[in-house]
Image (cartoon, rainbow, N blue to C red; front, top):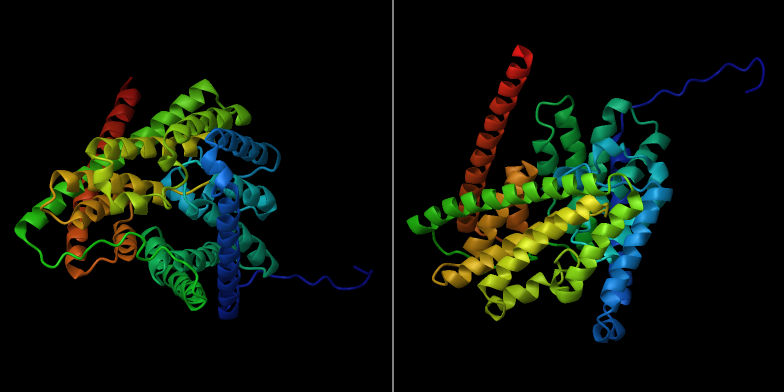
Length: 426
């Protein structure tokens, strides 16, 4: 600045409507391009005649992409959710801080992680990428710090609502995690605006969303047996969610003890196990999105035992993928696990609708895993095209799971309080 020229202070400002529209458009355009690029490259790498006729390429490919993920983490500071959980992977992990300077590493790691065959979905890396883009845009727009959360979540709403195929999904998701916070109503308005932009962009361009991803024949009535079944399935779903949480903690603790913070060793350890499992059971590669439909069409071809083994292995692979350092999301692997258990039950009790088993378990597990019952109900309604009768049973199952979750948290709180009291007395 020249001598004598007064310095002009540029103050941060509250986002205007046109800025929310702008970030909504940027987020959904990036999301569309990123998903199309991922699907095209993944098909070119894995869905070709050479790979289909040479099984050895599966473990080799998994190991190569695992190494590349490790390099992205080590040298490009790509984020991960090693010390996070289900919610962190879908919100961009607030501890990461949405640092747009790591965007190149995040972008490369997102592709390499999804190409690796790890049991992770695309919604996880998409959250990190969109949040980093949003951080860059709001810095250029000089967005007020207090409004940064609402601005970033509006960007995420545009991305998620488009790919899921529902204009309300992220508004519900964000509201459940933002109850009682300052500016909640304003942030909700931004969320709805950006979210409907993302939904309309995806819909009007005819892009593939995950709406009706797992449709089942509609339940045409509600009987006392169905209600009892929804309650029992809610209990089972809560139990499965607890086991998945224990698997996540157990695998994480084991990795911390054995390999610690050695990035390359950690990712290779996980990659080798994933490679071995995928070599013998290719149906367990990736998120499960591509294979789940084929299994749903003819579950009897696999049988009850195999379906339950698939469910257990997928849950373990999800935990291993997270704790090894792959960048991904939990939704599709979780849906895969729940669907396998539901299909196994439908084979054991064929007189009841298969959708009752599958969707009630799905909503119960996601309710407890995310701590967001409304989000879980809406997601399963959209994915499974549930009618009002099915919806009522989903609510019953979600409530049961939620009550169990609340009870477990109260028991833990009392136990922790007791330990603190003993330590204070000692």
